[in-house]
Image 1 (cartoon, rainbow, N blue to C red):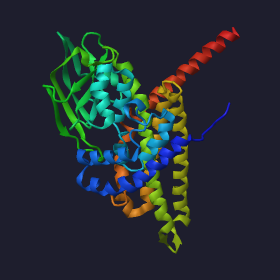
Image 2 (cartoon, rainbow, N blue to C red):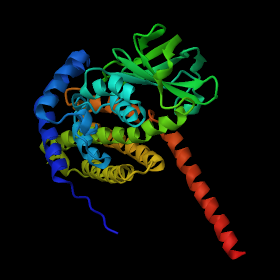
Image 3 (cartoon, rainbow, N blue to C red):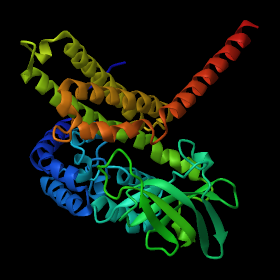
Image 4 (tube, one colour):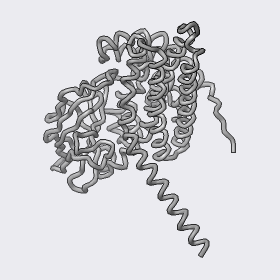
Length: 399
């Protein structure tokens, strides 16, 4: 058995070109976005620049115009894109579109691919994923979904309320997760946002703000969609949500690892240049502990991420490995950015130094795509089942 962490020449080439693009094109637009908000105008400008640079959608299939990289290779590239909060948006590898691209590529019919997937990969439109609901509806537990899809002649009628739906304002379509009134399971349906009865309401005032289309409350009031709007098969929504969520957890890890690395690099540079009490900050023992712990967390997070991504790239489901990675990395990158704020001092809390913006935006990562507590529960249950099965086998051998 061997471990090979070397990168293919094409991966290295794209990584370096993405790094150059983010530094030269994306970073100069950050303060504008922080001050005025992130909108579709800026998104289109950055995306046109990324296309011109030849680094478009590295995670998307090559036959649709993307980079066509393996999932473990994409981990390297999305981390690099994530070194700016605007980088994934520019390269069209940001949530929620990135997760919807993957889901549609796996599940959609040819007609659905042509209508939704092709323009989404091309950046012509945006999308959202409507699952999360106000309590007691779906959150970290998708099975709690209350939005109802009822079979009617010629199609389905959808009724319910969603909230915290990222990117809903201005999205061309949504993939809605609804309880199937016939089977009692769940069904995913594609809904054009101009369909009568669909309405985007107020934006939640969240601590993160670097997201086109906000985090919105969405209403479905007797929304009719035809039978061909079903994504996959009716009643199998809970199966398909895992198709989307396991890789999406890992792509979040990729992007936020890049953001945390950037925060650390900014703080480290400041620690090297800043003098306090007659010494460089980087030479003071307590500062050195912050720096060392950041270095350790970043390297450990990357190693765990690459292992989980390799499993998915080799055809595994990655359910448990993505849960482990999501818990550890979401908490590790949070620690890294927190220490970076501390190292940078007062300016670390500001958007001027970028670290403050990353600090605000990264906090929600421990909640979306399954809160850390939900993943820990799942990991523990699997471990207990394995231990129980081992005990039964050993008992059988002994008898």
